[in-house]
Image: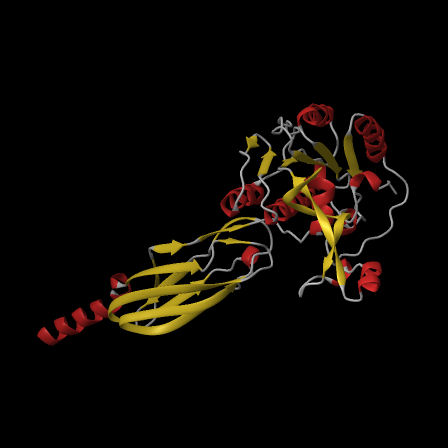
Length: 376
């Protein structure tokens, strides 16, 4: 009788082994703020205590937005068992994402039934900025951010030559002044004038239309992010408005990170975003899919305070990204014709307008001043 009781007790312990499993886990990444396409290393750590022998099955969920494939591990555990794994996290598009969980199941030795183990799990949250690409800094800054008067410590203006000087190691080849070099008999380079730089305010209109809503917001946020990055490299003060949000005008990496975090989360809206009054003397860039009456009125009011106002229109809601190839677009849609009429009105009031079609390359579009570009 005693032997039978011991046997039944031992069997009951073996069967109840999954009930005694305890554990904890953590899924983390080295950097919690990323740009799309720029991978980062992450780690998965899971540990368990098992007073009795038990079969454990741990399965890591997938996360396609972060390019994380599913994975797992099986093991016979007793006392302690740990699983550590290094993963590559490569986000695909902007947004806020929670790293995936790990599901754990425990099965006793005879394997007739399985129980899911509730594991306290710490998951890092990853914020993915909009996809951005480098803007041609000299042309971009001069056409959009330079304010005109020459000053010490400003932005170099390749169109203004202040004089010539002797060549110094590291001077670019395109700075050589060949006539002065021939006269002096040794290398001479151009000394460029510097112009006073202003602050930059970017306004992103989030009004979207039908099926193009997601496409437009993605491309518009990417353009806004690229402009802010280019301006921050020159230590310019930055400001951003979109939807009901309006930032302060400030500078520095932390302020830029706050603006990029906002662009990572913006979504399309049914109504146009009101254009705020920019700080006096700032350069303002408005990005919109269609120049609604409120956007046109806001651009005209902004021109009173801003040093210059640029209105960028994306009628198709997209443009060609670096490496993409487009097809020719023939004719003009009704929406584009309406925009062309509004462009003449705005330019007459001092607001520069550029219509970026779906087959336009944005880098070529920023390669020369807005005012010198014509519509094709």
